[in-house]
Amino acid sequence: MILLSIIIGFIILITLIILKVSIVAAAPIAASLIALLNGLNILEVLQVQYLPGFADFVQNYLFIFLLSSILGKTMEASEDAAAVGDFVLDLLPYRYAAVGIFFASAVLTYGGISAFVLIFTIYPIAKSVFEEAGLSKSLILASIVGGSIIIGMPMPGSPQIHNLIMMDFLDTSAVAGMQVALISIITASLAAVYYLLFRTKALLGDRYYESEKRLFEKPNPIKMLNFLLGMLPLFTVFILLAVLGKPPVLALFMGVVVSLLKNIRKINILSILNTSISNAAAPLMFAASAMGFGRVLSSLPLFEGFLQDLLRLPLNPYLLVGIITNIAAGLLGSASGGMLLTLSTVGENIVQLVDAEKFHRVILIASTGFDTLPHNSVYLAMLAYTGLKFKDTYFDYFVVTVLAPLISLGTAVIIAIYL
Image 1 (cartoon, helix red, strand yellow):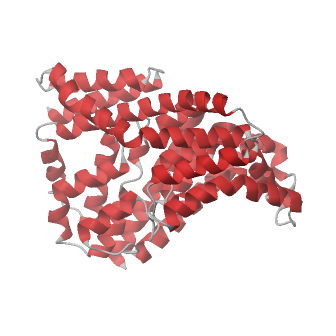
Image 2 (cartoon, helix red, strand yellow; image 1 turned 45 degrees about the horizontal axis):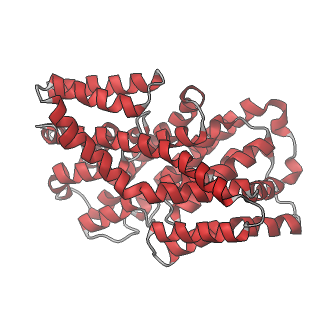
C-alpha cells in the first residue's frame, strides 16, 4: 500500500505541476494524499515532516538565492551579461550558442558553483547569447542544467557535494572511478550535444548555416576587454569558491560587491536590490516545497524497506545500485537526497560486493536522471526566475537532463562490470 500511495501521490504532484498549479500548493496536497492513503494524520505529517523539510531548505539556501539573484540582476542591468554574450558569439557561429552554454555551465559547475547559483549567474549570459543568435529560449534550461549534471557534477575531482558524499562514505579519493567517469561522461555529452545541435537547426532553419566564418576568428580587442570586465564578478566567485575553498555565501557576497562597485555609475542599486529580492522569493519557495515533499516520502514507514526489497532483485550489483539510486533521486527530486537515501538503506550491503572506486562513480552518476522530473527543485526554481513555461521547455529539458544521464548511467554500469 505504501508503494501504491507513493506512486499515486507522485502522479498527482506531476499532474498538478503540468496543469500549472504552483508546487507551493501542489506539494502539500500530494503529501496530504500520501498521508491519507497510509492512514496517517495529515496535519501531523505536514507539521512534523513537510514544514521542517521546507524550513531547512530555506534556512540553508536563503542567502545563496538572494545573493545569486542580486549578482545575476546586476550583470543583466549593467550589460555585463550582454558583453559576455556578444564576445562568445564573435567566436562561435549561431549554431553553437546552446552548446557553448552547455560547456560553460559544465566548467562553472566543475569549479564548485552549485546548480542554484547557476540559475542566477549564467542565465543572464545565456539569455543574451540566445537573443543575439535569434534562438528560442526554450533550449536555455536544458543547456544550463545539462552541462552541469552531465559533466560538471560527476567529473572526477569535482568539488560538488555529491562527490564529497561518496568520498566520506567510501573513504575514496575525489578522482575515484576515473575510467568509468570519463567514458560515460563523453558518451552522454556527445548525445546531449547532438540533440542540442539538432534542436538548434530546427529552431534556426536556414540561419543555422549562417555566420560559419565567425568560428575561431580573432576576437575584437574591445569586446575581449568588455568580456573580461563583465566576467570579473564571476571570476571572483569562482576563485573564492573553487580555488580558495571559501563558503558559497562569502564567495557570492564578494562577487556582488565587485559587480556593484564596478557598475555603480551604470545601475540603480536600490532598484536592483528590490527587484532581486522579488526574483529570488518565488524560486526559493518552489524549491523548498519540493524538498518538503521529499522529506515526507523519505519519512514514510517501510519506505526504506521498499529500497531494500529492490536489493533482492537478481541483478548485477552495479546495475542494482544504479536503479535504486535513480528511483530514490526521482522520488525525492534531488540527486544528493537520492544518494544519501540509497547509502543509508542499502549502501553497506552493496559496497561489500563491488570495487569501491567504481561504486563511487556509478552511484554518483546514477543520482542524475530521474531527479530532474518536473518536481525537481532546480527546474522549478529556474521556471520561476526566468518566467519560461513548462510546456515550452520541459521536452528539451527531459531529453538532455533525464535521457542523456541515463545513457551515462548505462555506459558507467557496462564499464564497471566489464573493465
